[in-house]
Image (tube, rainbow, N blue to C red; front, side, top):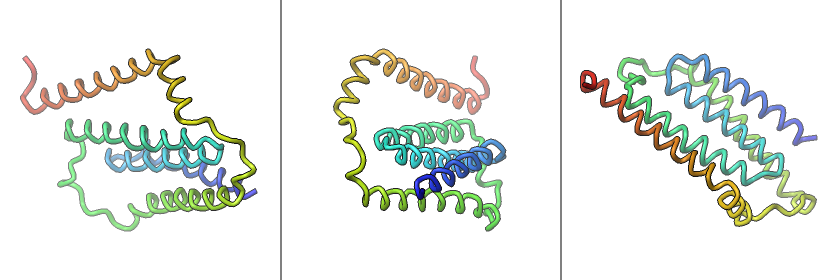
Length: 168
């Protein structure tokens, strides 16, 4: 019953944070809302007995991809932090509320899961997941890494083009 309540709280948090990320005008604030949404999704994966997927969600999406988004925003000079005013408590309130719901839900889920750890089946070892990923889906992993490389080169090209007065 408590896991179901946590699930619905996290689902609402993820939806609200995603809507705020879409409607936010400041790109850095939008990324922070998106990180909150991704963290909520990671806790949902943890509740669904997929801790490896939850770790991937935090490390890859909330970590690496959001850093790439911030890099692009900095390269294209979209942030303009010097033009903005210091945010008031009204601007902080949604982010603090959503983040505290996500982190509080994670704490409650870990505590309740730790008490009933014997009731869950054994998980697939990480080594088996890695072997299957790279043996059966090695080409897909390489294609994703090439896409990230192309995105990085494109961001560098766009950043150099806008600062240099145009490419010739």
